[in-house]
Image: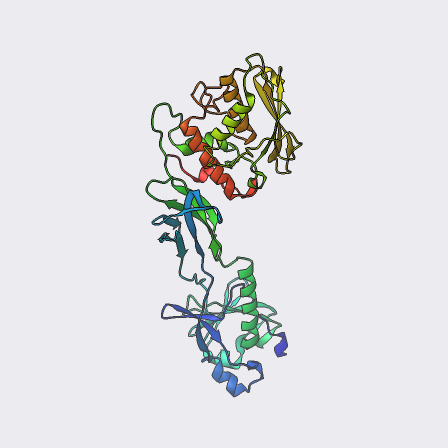
Length: 443
């Protein structure tokens, strides 16, 4: 029978590695086609296959990054204080504590797939058919002579070492007769390596790289999420300090609770808000402000409201110089005796991006408000332009109270919420980039 008709292994796992003293090694045969050697040379090589030993390396999961405080102190890089001693853990991978620069690095030792060695110098070889039935016991003489003691009908067969449970059987096809093939190890190993490399590309020899990722530090809300680490990942994130309510007038247990109520989409868990590249918003005003039946100063109320929502210039939501010219992004103020909907004011979106992020608004305001009423209503509508929900508890002393204008100035906890809103908003250019705030635990 021609050597070219001898069959390759029909099993799927690589077969060019062996276990020795608890370590996995790669078998590298000498170059050349063994089938071209003399019978004497082949007989000597089959039971004592010559090889060199080289450690087998494999892919390893790794994740590293930087942790900072959510409140921005480095405007150039939009980063807060770098946090030391944050305990970061990737479940099943490892943990680390951030250094003085807020850096962490978690990795595992190389993951070595469990391979089975090819049949080498078997001490108790047997011949099996494709159904796993033993046909005949073999000896080293049969292998050296490449001859079966029995006539083999055409079909698939395996040679397996009964004394080595870890040795992978060698499969071949017989075209009938007594011949047992001699493996062309060079070609065999080449093809097995190609198969192995391809399987790595497809992720077949890796465990699931999705890990439960957590971070904790005293005084901060715990961070938890599932993350696909892969082979080597970088993941930077921020932590939010626990800011508990100071007195009974505070509607929320923590600032983060209030932020989640007023500034986060309850369905997606992502922050709402404008694109930071569109800020500060322009405010278009009429050429002359009305005075209304109470003869009030709407321009002063607007100025006060902008200063308040910006927390005395801490945040830069709006352009403080109002304009009478047309604007492309921002709020167009319209004073009327009958705002749409029958209330004191109404804000509608008239321009938004494909991802539904709004950038242009019309704000109708009742011309006949009192001075205090104007202070409260304008603040509320400026909050709505920023996409802040009017979801604070009903009849609370908050500007953004639900169905209730409770105050003509923002409550101290509202200002903390708005500060948090601003600094998170500044970090992400679009809605898709924003984090899921459910990753931050509030209890």
